[in-house]
Image (cartoon, rainbow, N blue to C red):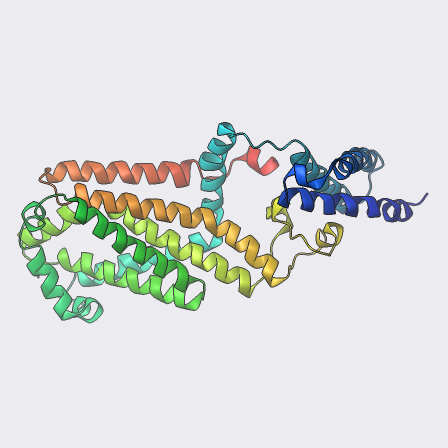
Length: 354
């Protein structure tokens, strides 16, 4: 029998196994029925045999790859367990998520855009002799005056110390920033504009406070207040914008590299998985589903960082702790970010092989 005839003959069974996989993934096993489960087990064993034959007779690579995915998907449905698998949760939190975020092109784009504009605006605002009125043009003269008056006093005396109401205020404030960056980011252009605006305003504010136009006392109070929570808050802004862009780009360009897709990310519909495995473009609704799944851990990390930043901003930044202690907190937070997103996120050779 020719290879094409063999493939065509077995394809109907592969399609039936695919449909049962989709049914089992969206329903409890008890509702599927004993007959369908028995049929599923039969088709699963047959697909395993087909995969072994495909490997032995060196069938076309796309067929072997398709069967690998189908068998893996069926195996996951057959032996899935609803018990809490802590090792799997740990693998997701400390291997999969940091690597996905590290390799996400949208996060990389927002990271570089934010920090380039932030540093450039900070440099220009910190040198008023070369760039006069730059900070006032970006931040606003009234806001500049307000900041200087606000930080004329030490943070501990200005905010009456740490309070629970302060924590609630900062959580609400930071959540608003994150949601805005994420929602507007879905429009792509709007998200990039909001990101650049935030980077320019924050950079100009930091630069102005470090400029010779501001008294040393006001500058010291400002950096004493923002140092501890700055690493988490600025990183959260970058991630929120990256998550929004991830969804926006999935709508604009529904192209995904097949090797980057997980088995459960393949769209389920009337069309066969066999056909879709040979394509690089998906329907926009399927692409949106994949983009939303990729954006979810990014936005989750952003939300956690915003909350942590709010807690630090409410309880540590305005506290009477010495400035050196707040700097230690900032160094510790920066270290955590580097370990999680860079050390754990950097792709390893074994993961590429897997």
